[in-house]
Image 1 (cartoon, helix red, strand yellow):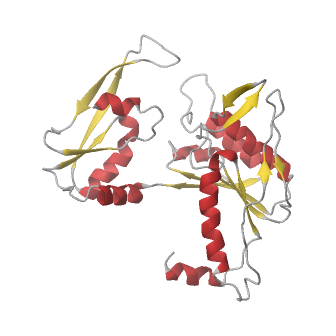
Image 2: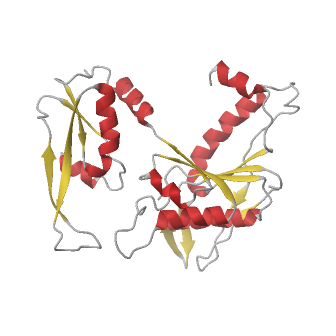
Image 3: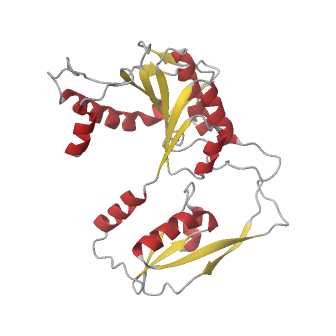
Length: 288
């Protein structure tokens, strides 16, 4: 971190002692965050705000399950008066648990349930609770088109009712869902700069001009971010729109008949495609 930020926070008084609760799906991310915080904290050993060395900010916790699959949240140290940050990755499908002798993969619902269990286990004792959720739970179900649930808005209201003060997420599918909780903090960080930085580092020979480079949006939902990239780079923008068969419903959705392209030719150009969310990658594959 730049020296400027070190000076800004050098004499700052914390709200309360910092603590991290890291759920099963976010262990790797939690270790990286904890390592950074520990190094930052221990650099000031001997100063008035740092009297002793800190080995970790992670508070031990677990979410064991009974044979039937029912779970419970357990915090193995005190959280009284702690400024508590809970890190959860609801999109981690690699986590598994046993139920009735069979191995099951954890779904977003399972991760979210474990989050609520640990908040419940804290019992209202922390000074403040902030949830770090890189992938927003229910983010794809952010609006109602017919008689259907509003999962993301309901999740935010549930967390607010349980005492969560802030939620931190990255590149939400539609950040306007925060209107469901106008009195709760909602920080949505966009990776636009990091993406362009990685693109230039990975492909240093790219020529960002109209004759050699073009931005293509895979559908209407990703237009805003691609408009931003095209505007910053000063290149052309094309897009695909999904032509659907509205007379048929398959698995609750109207099937896509074709992807139609609108825009200038991509012949002999490098094409940059940015989608708003990737689950199966089917949209990207159809464009090739």
